[in-house]
Image 1 (cartoon, rainbow, N blue to C red):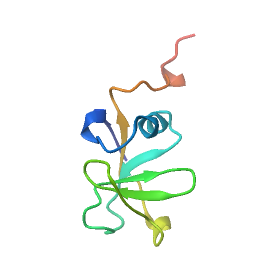
Image 2 (cartoon, one colour; image 1 turned 180 degrees about the vertical axis):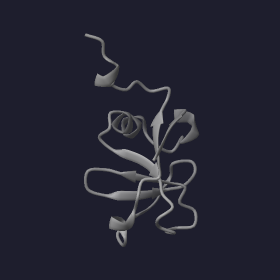
Image 3 (cartoon, one colour; image 1 turned 90 degrees about the horizontal axis):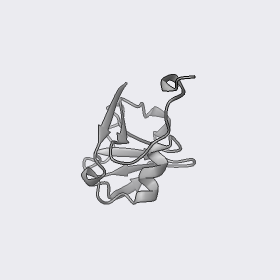
Image 4 (cartoon, rainbow, N blue to C red; image 1 turned 45 degrees about the horizontal axis):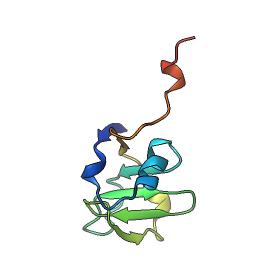
Length: 93
């Protein structure tokens, strides 16, 4: 799995609170090759209860209802210009 930092302006249709949830690790923003899905789906957003397909601007396309269990995270995204917690592995005692 590859980890990527992107600027929040890259996905202008995603609200700030959603971006914060992604950076806090509460929700996941990812890409997958495992499911053909909607041809315009560029990203997937996994919340507590649902998975959504997003286009390349972050606009919601549809909820993934079928084959959601077949989704594999190939690339995981975080927002470089929004704060996120310090990793415990990077903390000095």
